[in-house]
Amino acid sequence: MGKREFPRIVGTEGAFHSAISGERPVAPNVRLAAARRPSRAGLAMIPRRKPRPWTAKFRDAFRGVARALRSQSSFAVHLLMAVVVVVVAVVLRVSLVGWCLLVAAIGMVLAAEIFNTAIESLARSLGPRRHPRIRDALDVASGGVLCAAATAAVIGVLVLGERAGSLLGWW
Image (cartoon, rainbow, N blue to C red; front, side, top):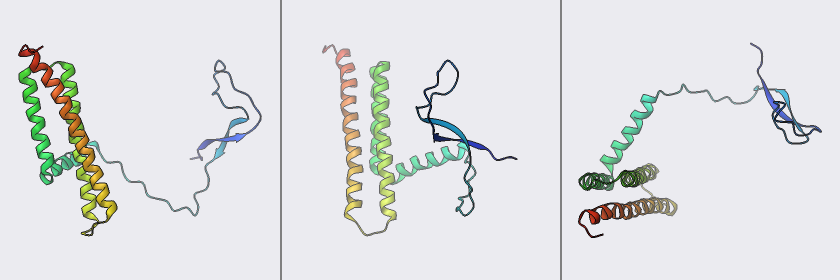
């Protein structure tokens, strides 16, 4: 097999090529020239891993969700609240737009809780000593969950409250 050639930008005098001519537009004083790949002799090569199948990726992702559910009581509470919101939305016959907002809010909270769980797991892996920056990182991650949960609560009150109010004839 011959060596594959890769384009390299080199400086020359030139002008913009016309899009009509079919040539790629290039800035003035620059043209594409064929160049050989640099020699890899002496460079440390990192062996390529075989790509993982999608089934393995999904299995690991579901394992992560299950781990968050088992190890974090707050994740279980958020999941329980999500189920309650879905049941109330079904009873109130929420509109499609309302469902989209509720599902997005639920997903946002659960994702924030999973990220928080991942950061907590990394912090625990560093050992029993507490560093102020680790404490700060954990606090910021918890603050992110709090912001997501507060936003989701406002969305839930607006969507479910509007629907309940219209069914009860309040407005």
